[in-house]
Length: 180
Image 1 (cartoon, rainbow, N blue to C red):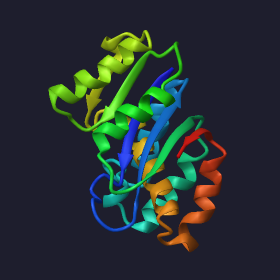
Image 2 (image 1 turned 45 degrees about the vertical axis):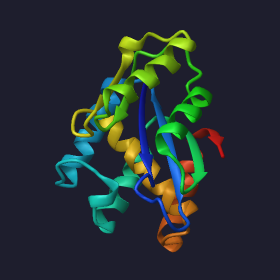
Image 3 (image 1 turned 120 degrees about the vertical axis):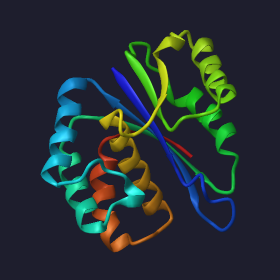
Image 4 (image 1 turned 135 degrees about the vertical axis):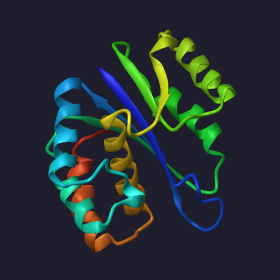
């Protein structure tokens, strides 16, 4: 099993918003990656990113991506928070598998941050060699985590609910754990 982790809402330190941490679990890694790349090619986009994609393309991507086989674990917290502290706290509740082949976190993090996450993995008896912080361009699974985090945050922030809600309801069927 492969796990892809992304956050959304970390840029908000004032006003009401939510911080969302998403773990995407994938069993059939190769097929999953190829399907995402094929979808991006069909849509004529280099790679999907929630914040940088126009709604028309976002909608087509979400529609097809939700047909793929993956599961989600999500933490939803009210901002303002310290995302580094919350990542550490919530990961210890969400990372409960023991058959992981790899854990990929979106975005390059400072060394101290990686060490903190590795210490969580060690206490749960996970191999720390399986953890990597990566760019979204390197792993298509990160882009699905980004899509999921963006969609969930938009839903909880009540942004564009007339567009978002139907996709959130479909995504909700893939959520196996929610921490609030």
